[in-house]
Image 1: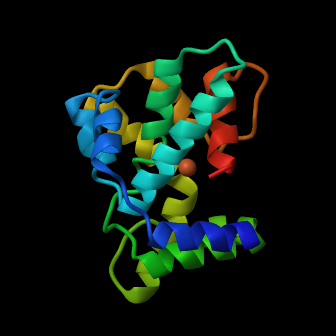
Image 2: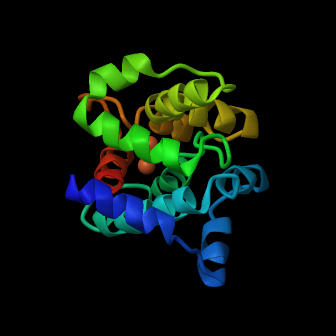
Length: 174
Ligand SMILES: [Fe+2]
Ligand SMILES: [Fe+2]
């Protein structure tokens, strides 16, 4: 619970500097850059912090660092800026941490009324990996990355590539 509150607080004060912006762009195609910068600043900051954590975790593992960083930077692009409000996002994150199964079944895509927007926020919270994968497919991203992004909240499986295992750890730490 405390870590969730800390996560919300840091999301509200997130910033990305000019040097970091350059560092991010060098790993992404023009289409992917559009998706990355199309997230809210809070989600951009989260993805960047996941990339930094992944880089540290990669040191002791045999992985493709470029592939790993691209997965980290792109894993949440399905959370498009302006799609859900900050308060709905906070409610979705907190409620989902208490009653995940109920929250997942209550989520429903489609915006409109205040009530529909909140249900949409719950939907995005649980189904953003699929949305990310679809956007990346449209952007022409390679299949290996799309596969990893799509599975980043799925239960670990025996044939998971090492980049996916590290991405999950880095994501959980941020
Ligand atoms: Fe995610
Ligand atoms: Fe994430």
